[in-house]
Length: 380
Ligand SMILES: Cc1cc2nc3c(=O)[nH]c(=O)nc-3n(C[C@H](O)[C@H](O)[C@H](O)COP(=O)(O)OP(=O)(O)OC[C@H]3O[C@@H](n4cnc5c(N)ncnc54)[C@H](O)[C@@H]3O)c2cc1C
Image (cartoon, rainbow, N blue to C red; front, side, top):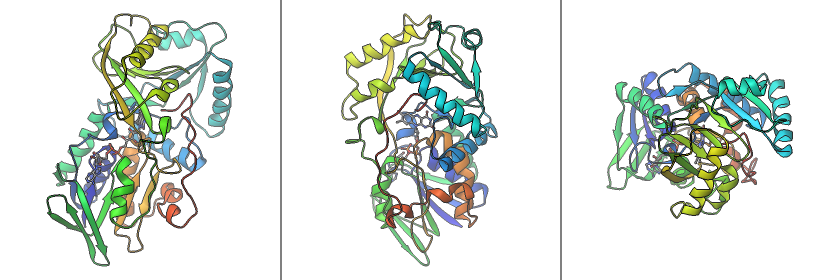
C-alpha cells in the first residue's frame, strides 16, 4: 500500500512509523521542517489525568501504557506530583481523584513527608496542603520522541520531503493525488493528514469538514506560554503541578514552566512580554528551592491543535476511505498509541478506541464546535 502522510509533527511521525511497520510505502510531506509545529512547544506530560469524557480518558490511558511499551531515553516515567494549597484547588483535586480511582487510574494520596521524599527541593507548602502522586504518568522530550518515531519510519523506507506545503488533495475511487506548492504531485492509495492546528485547511483541500479552534481568537484554550529556564542546581525529577505553576525538568538542569492562570496574557502574534516573564519567573522560587539564580533561556507561546469540540479527531473523512484525518490536543501523550491504531485503520482494522472520534461527527451534525472550557489545574 502507498500512503502519503501530510505533516511531520509527533503525530505524522508516529503514523508514518506505524505504517512502515505494516509494510506500507510511505511518503511524508512537511511544509517546513519536522517538529516545527506545536510539537516543539509542548509540556509533553504523558497523562490521562484530567481527560473527559470516558472514551477520551480511555484513549489517553491506553496511550500512557503505549509509552511504557516504547521505552527510550526521551521517556521519563517518574510520575506527577500535584500539590493543592487553595480550597478551590483542593475541591477540584478531590473530585478528580475520586473519579480517577473509580476508573482504575493509578492515584496515591501522599503525606507531606512522602512528597518531600519524592521532590526534596519542593518548598514545603503550608500545613493542610493536599498532595497526590500519579505514578504512571511521565514526561518526554518531545523532539527526541519525534526523532525516534521519524527514525523508525525512515529505517522502514519512508521518504521525507521538507519544505513541501501541500496545496491540493484529489481523491477518487482509484487513489489519491497530493500536490505541493512547487507543483510536484505524489500518488498513493491513501492520504493521512496529520497537520495539527492546520487541519481545518488541509483536510478542507480534500473536501472534509474538520473545524479547529483558531488560536488567534480562542485565547487560553489554544494558546499557552512556556518558559525554559537556564540550568539551575535544583533537584526536580518529575512533573510537578500546582494551581499557579506546572514544572518539569527540561534537560541539563533547565526547568520548563507553565502558568495556566497567566496564559490569559498569551498572544501568539508577539513575543512574550518581559513583564509576563518576570511574573512567571517570580513564581518559581516559591515552589522549588535552589532556583534563585534562574533566568529565562527560551519563552514561547505554544498553539494547541484543538478540534472544535476539544476531542481527538481520527478516521476516514470521505466515503471512499481514501482520506484519513488525525488531529488532537495531547498529541504527545497519544502518539505511540495512534502509531498502531491509525496505521491499523488505514489497513482496514477498525480500532474500538477510536470509534468515538470520527471526523464525520462534524459533517453529519452529531457534533459541532462546542465551547471548550479554559484549562484547569491538572491539565496541560
Ligand atoms: C502549551 C502547550 C502545552 C502542551 N502540553 C502537552 C502535554 O503536556 N502533553 C501532551 O500530550 N500534549 C501537550 N500539548 C499538545 C501537543 O504538543 C500537541 O497535541 C502535539 O504536538 C500535536 O502534534 P501534531 O503532530 O498533531 O502537530 P504539529 O506538531 O503542529 O505538526 C503538524 C505539522 O504539519 C505541518 N503542516 C501544516 N500544514 C501543512 C501543509 N499544508 N503541508 C504539509 N505540512 C503541513 C506543520 O508544518 C507541522 O510540522 C501541548 C501543546 C501546547 C501548545
